[in-house]
Image (cartoon, rainbow, N blue to C red; front, side, top):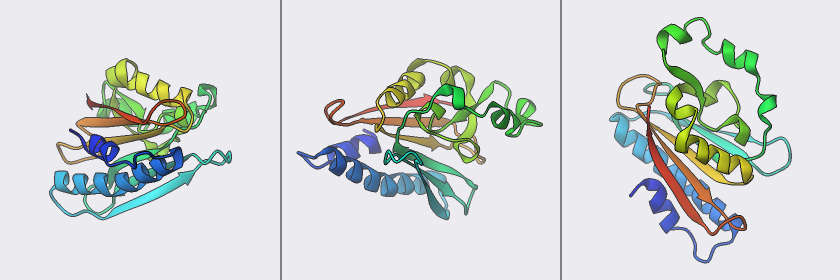
Length: 192
């Protein structure tokens, strides 16, 4: 069982969409921070930044960082919103560590914790991700589901097995919400 399964099991029953979102959002704040601090082995200085959608949809993305130990992302979660792939800032993406990326991270894409097509941005949302995971399989299925069902609550939690900002694994959770689907959580752990 993962922390995501525990969060889903503790959800209000019956719970309306707004109550379920509030429950998962609050529970993620505590659970991902606690699990990260246990994983990292040293107390970090956690900071969470919230990016509300500018389109009035109520969507948001929260990014939790460890500023004290490694200056790296602890988790990213929020409500998806539609964003056409054609709006991706390709120049900014290519410029992100452009002078050193290929030599430092061979075989890695500039992956998004929260996909662009789900409303995710660049810069702090980018990380070195295995191209084979980023470009296909269940990772893409999960992103596609959230993009096709705006308002889906998703969380990506990097797992660090070594110092630095490149995760060794990634936990992905998609919380399916009414009215699109009965409340359920879809999870997977991906190598990185």
